Amino acid sequence: MIGKSYFLLSLLQVGLSQEWKGDTPREVTAQEGSCVQIPCHYSYPSHLENQPRVGVWFNNEEWRTSSTAFHSKDHSHELPRFHHRTRLSGDLKDSDCSLIINNITREDAGSYYFRIEFDSRNRYSYYPVTQLHVSDAPRNLSITSLGMINGSSINIIEGNSAMHHRISHLLRLK
Image 1 (cartoon, rainbow, N blue to C red):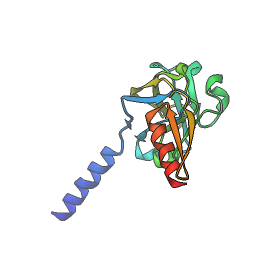
Image 2 (image 1 turned 180 degrees about the horizontal axis):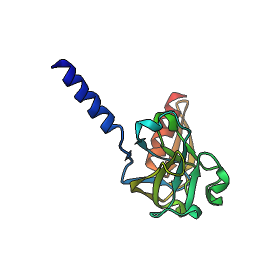
Image 3 (image 1 turned 135 degrees about the vertical axis):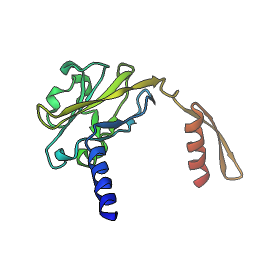
Image 4 (image 1 turned 180 degrees about the vertical axis):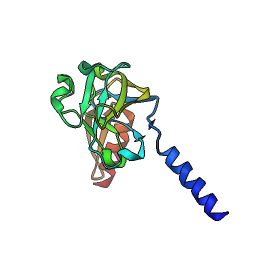
């Protein structure tokens, strides 16, 4: 009985590992000028485990070579606006296909999806797409010094509240 159970469990594991699956969020938001990570993990048929692979991120909902945001093997395939701004944060061999985009622009907003390529017969595009939304960059901060009271400087800080909190914390450390 134990032998049959083990056999069925092994058969189930092999069957599950034969699937192409991807895990990415439906939406991600980033501020203009900042960086963003699109988390991504994928699975593939187990017989491909030791095969070389290429990871490609596309910036639209349909596969076209002219929409490549990142190419792990040949960066010349990438759209010029993505050159030197995109990279993977993990390792494709660890099934981590998370994409990092630096210096986000309004033009970066849109749909992104990942494709893994082992060879001409074993390639797979993972859907659904991730929609990247780009919000306004924070306003510039201005710091006005009002002088000193009892040896402490008095400042008025205008601008983004999150940045205000960080600057206030730094001022308290002095």
